[in-house]
Length: 114
Length: 112
Image 1 (tube, each protein chain N blue to C red):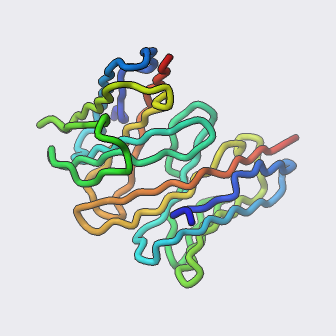
Image 2: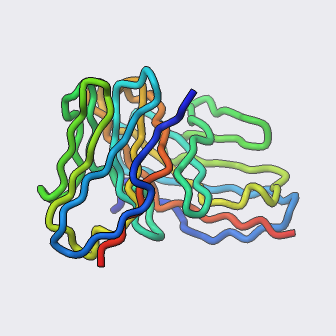
């Protein structure tokens, strides 16, 4: 079975631009979460979606938004990019949103903002 | 105080050694706990869930101490391939809402 897939793999943008990252969950998984990981830190939670509804939001500015589609894939959008947005963006999928539902991560999108 | 705290290391240990990592969490209502492994420039991968009764998977043993709010990971007979960053993960959400918090990660380097 295919794991979580993300696109693109790498991305270079300049300050002020907008970016859209995409994620396809494991087949049968209905929940997608997004994380930001800067170098030397653990992943920081951005959003979680389940059945197209937002179920969780981390401490990120409104420049960050996301949505989930009927096929459970998801997009993360970041507007007005800042240098500090340079990071590895990870998508994780899980069966549901129960506390014991394991999250499985995709390979990530490495975003560089110049 | 951070929600999840780990010693970032690095821990440099010789092959065959036993090494232990601890992780503390601040939210006493936390529901579930995990250890993930992350190789350099790769995504985190689940190593094991952590239960109050403790659990073992080969050379790896995880323990949860709810009273003291810490979890531990013990690696016996370290292999070169164990070199990675080990992330402590705590889920303090309730049903329908997950609040997943990662620690900073502990870097392990196993040396020949």
